[in-house]
Length: 131
Image 1 (tube, rainbow, N blue to C red):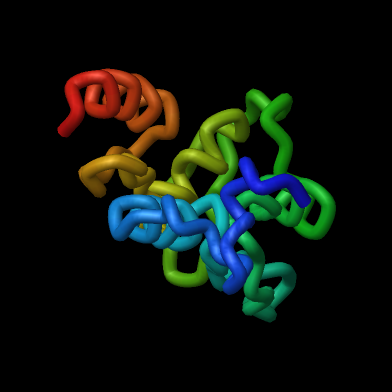
Image 2: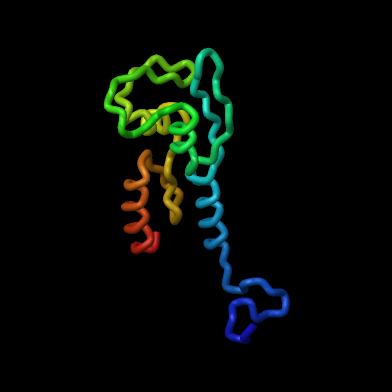
């Protein structure tokens, strides 16, 4: 290990890691993409109840429950207690927003947005503004 490394100190910790860095890591780790969400989709008469990482939720819905973004049919949402009808292509956003309160937090300031692209656009401005 060279002496120019951030790990050159004898305690082997990055001495340049700030409180702001720690807060950003916490925001990332608790974002909906990484947080666990309980699936309450009802197949037959049984609610799924599997805890799924946010980033794997679309795959779970597709592989376990047959929900795809390619389905243009109007279908009843079978989330436990839901009575809404949704176009299949909108089912995952419906579940995100209505059932698991999936919000995307800005990595810089913590402000929350219902869609990832909205958070990303805000984050680029927020980061550049030094907020």
